[in-house]
Length: 469
Image 1 (cartoon, one colour):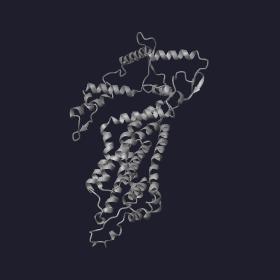
Image 2 (cartoon, rainbow, N blue to C red; image 1 turned 90 degrees about the horizontal axis):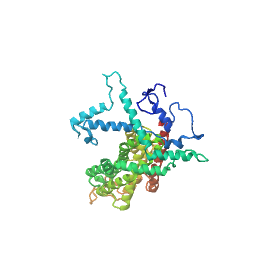
Image 3 (tube, rainbow, N blue to C red; image 1 turned 180 degrees about the horizontal axis):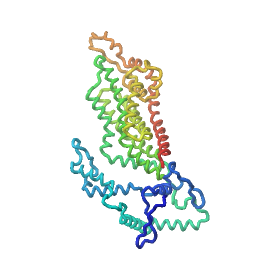
Image 4 (cartoon, rainbow, N blue to C red; image 1 turned 120 degrees about the vertical axis):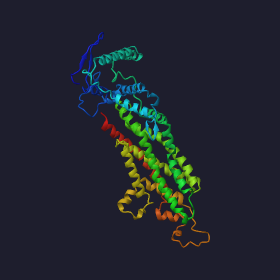
C-alpha cells in the first residue's frame, strides 16, 4: 500500500486511525489476507502460522470481508425511500406501450440513478469532508465495541488461550471446524438455487408451459394428422418431427439464458471466498433443472401426442416423451457450457440457435437425405443429437403404420405417391436401418447429456482458474 494515508486522531480515541485515499491498495491488501488474490498482480510471499507454511486452501474459508455491495444496497434502499419509490421496488419499469410504473415514477428512477453515483459538490473546495471521515471513524468504533461485547469475541479469546497451553500447536488454530464436503456444499447450493428461482412465479410458469405453447400452435395448425397419403399423412408427420426436434432444444436454451447468468455472477463472487467452486453452482443448477424439464416435457407430450392423433399406443407415447426430453435438456446444458466461456448471454443465444439450425439441417435427414450428402457433412451428422432424435421419432411414429391412398374405390392408386403406403417403406427410404438402431439411438442420444455436464464442469474449472483474482 502507498504511504499516502491521511492520519486522523479522533478526540477520545484509544489510538490512531489511518484514512487511506482511493487507489492506495486497501482492497488489494484485504484480498491478499482473505485468499482472494491468486493469479493477477504481484503478490509475493508465503503465509506461516505457528511457524508452519499454510496453503491458501487451508485458510481461505476462515478469512473474508464485507465488500461494498452490501453498503451499496443500503444506499439504493435509502435513495428509493427518499424519492418515494420503495412501493414499486419489485415492479418492472416498463414504458408507455408496455405499462409498468407511472411516468412520474420513471422520472424519479432516472433521478435516483444519478444520485446513486453520489455526485461531487462542485461548490465545495474540500471534496473529502473531514466530517465524513470522522463519522466513518465513529461507526468503526461502534462496530468494534459491539464485537468486543459479543459471545463470538469471548469464545475466540477462549480458543486462543486454550491453544497456548497445547503441547502440539494445531495447523490452523483459528479454525474451529473442518470445511463441509463437496456433497454438503452441493446440497446447500441445490436448496438455495431451487428456493431462489422458485420465487419468480412467472419464470417457473413459463418453464413448465413454454413447450406446450409451442405445441398448441402446431395443434391449431394441423388439428389432427390424417391417414391418407394424398391428404398429407406422411408430410404432416415429418413436419411434426422436424418442428419438435428443432424447437425443444431452443426452449431449453431460453431457460439457461434467462436464469443462469445471475447464478454465474453469484458464483464468480462467492467462489473467491472459498465457499465453493464455480462448477458446484453449475451442477446444482443442472440437478434443479431436471425435474422441471421432465414435468414440462410430460405436459407438452400429454397434450400434443393424443390431440394430434399420433400412433395410439401408450408405449409409443412413452418413447415419444423420452425422445423429446433429451434435446430439451441438451439445449439447456449446451447453453450452460457456452455461458462458462462467453460472458454475454445474447451471444450465447445466437450461437446455440445457429448450432441447432445446423444440426437439424444436416443431422435429421428430413431436409435432405443423409445418403446424398457429402462425406464431411455425413461425418458431421454423427456428432449431432438431432440425427438420433429424428430417427427415434420417425421409427416410433411410422413403424407399423398402414396408410390409405385416395378413395376406397381405388381410382387414384396410380399416383406415384401411393407407392409408399406402409410406414416401414418410408423408414427404409429416409433412414435405412433405423428400426434396428432404435435402442442404440436412444443410448447415444442420452449420452450427450452426461458428456455436456462433464464438459461444463471442465469449462467452469478453467473459468475458476482464469478469472479468479
